[in-house]
Image (cartoon, rainbow, N blue to C red; front, side):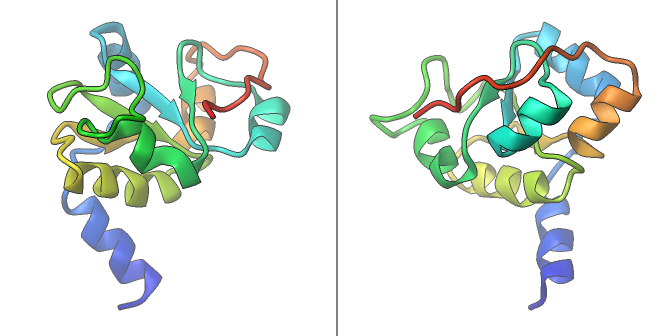
Length: 130
């Protein structure tokens, strides 16, 4: 299997969120998780209220059964994963679904699509959750 096939397979498990949908989901209590490296967040900004989690820690911080999960993470809470352009986030969201987060998805077009849609952005640089 190549990366294009992996991406298609991951996306087949997701109901991906367009920027306006992700904004609505966040307003309804969904957790927005930003997996972009800090350099991208510093340069381009962040989604207000999003939690930055380095990709390498994502499964430990969002596994509902993990002792290391973030507060408020539950199997029934929607989670929207955000990367820069919506590729790595698809793979990450599919991994979260395999961990039991049945409402995990990702943002179509990533952070750049959110910003292009004119949705709220704040200055970046928030340290990732350790």
